[in-house]
Length: 421
Image (cartoon, rainbow, N blue to C red; front, top):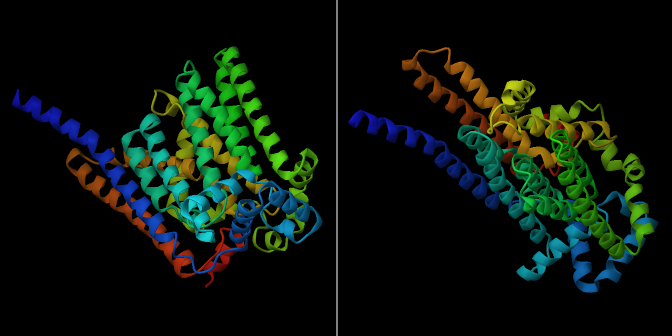
């Protein structure tokens, strides 16, 4: 009886340990973000433009935003900076200014910091719901110190809020796929989709990927009614959001001209041509630069996702789709001309780290089988040391390249130039 009791307690402790570790990593990630948000030496022009737009909304309201849209259409130089049609981001920053009583660029940076912290906790929740405890703790560790994520968490850009909205979609898709009878998930998906559209026009990419993912699963199951209801709710919500954006911009034609002109503007943008141009594979090189270990582990996670056996059971049913979501966002950025900037794939940072966590678990499982029982503990300690060393290296890269080095952006040519210093 004593041996049985001790064994049960040991198993319970073993099951709790990775969750306790994950909580520790959540605290570390939160502290790094908070400590870094005010350490920016010089703010980018994009950050200043977002801050200016939010101030104009506070001072002049809709007429001020419409005047910005008209200026954007007239002035070629203005088109190189964030569009004034991103009303969701503008209103979000303006609301934070009202609450804080401040109107400087730091307000937007704090919004990004908070959004990144929410994404960190949401990633942990997705891991708890759909993956093993060890995958969760490892993914949280990687996301806590992932250099590109820490960069957007300290900048007054729209990327961190858009990333949070995209990760919410991923979570909701996973929940709907698991239990499509809960209509509250369908409603929340439509709400998040609608709000995300107002933040940034590129949100259409993760939204489209998640929509296809969800419809494929529902239609394959023969759930035509659920698929139809979800589609109608999402389309209705997005239509309301687009109508609101058009009303803010001055009309549907103004909104259409601004959004449809993105490709043409980007093609002649000196900044994009200098820093974000080149062969598409350079984007993969950027992921390697910021953390080679994370890149190798994420690739291993993708390979596991390609194995049909990895989708057996509740814990890994979402893995193939999460891999597809991550790869699709990366491929889109690789294909679009002058789009080689890791900021543009920030919507997949969370799922990228999840894949790395899956890859780490797979390598540990394979490696531990090569040792006798007595030596597996030593292997586990060494493996954990390697993971922690890789995370520490990524953290040092962030502080060296971006905090101390002052690299202002995640454009691929900037990352390459930083390596040459």
